[in-house]
Amino acid sequence: MKARIALAFLAAFLTTACSNGEAPDSGSPMGPQMGMDPGMMQRHMAAIPPEYASLTNPVPADADSLERGQDIYQANCATCHGDEGWGDGPAAANLDPSPAPLAHTAPMLSDAYLFYRLSEGGQFPPFNSAMPAWEERLDEQARWDVINYIRSLGQNGMMPGDTGNGDSSMMDSMMAPWWILGWLLVIVLVVALVLAAVWAVGRSRTTNQTPGTPLTILKRRYAQGEIDTAQFEDMKRRLTKDEDD
Ligand code: HEC
Image (tube, rainbow, N blue to C red; front, top):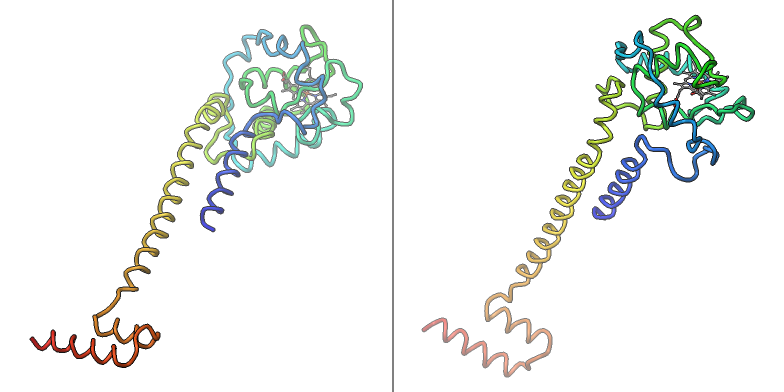
């Protein structure tokens, strides 16, 4: 029973750990052209203008910021980027290049790149896309809030204390194997404990069935009909005689 629970835990942890921050290979609503968009790599490597290049996110990705970011996202971004950030919003169909699958790309892109792209949009080379500029419509705090939010898409929520900065989410994904290892260790320990308990119970059962004194054995054998009355009396006499000696 316990082993089964442990196995269920193991399976749950492995699946969450494997899906963390990664777009699922199948079953995701990403069309085949998205994520494989040949221009995407180029856009990701576009030079970031100097006024953005050294920016880092000053807004901690706490629950308040994520909530504000979610509202901004649902109101302004989901039509193109999709409710869950897979680039599959209702307005996405006719766009070329198609809206980025932010749930997949945002966690691996730097604060500077995201803030630049969000502020200035994509209606100029090398992007030449329908991505609007948000500089005029969203103040700086709002832009960082929505960046915190799109970073949290595709992960199963944010780790507490994660600021949502590029560095720390990189760290999180690098730490994942150690995390799994830690849980494996816990599971192994639990299984070992269960085995030890089963062994101990088994042992105490056999020791409880100690044969008892020769006289009780004799009585039992007699009660079970293994020996008749004469044999019993005879053996009993000899036993008591031994004890008297
Ligand atoms: C009219 C559709 C549209 C809307 C609305 C829109 N985007 Fe985009 N966005 C795009 C397209 C198309 C791209 C991909 C091409 C590009 O990188 O310019 C893109 C790219 C991006 C990128 C770059 C991601 C990458 O992987 O390079 C970010 C970040 C982004 N959008 C954030 C947002 C946010 C946040 C909002 C809402 C405030 C938003 N977008 C609203 C169409 C849209």
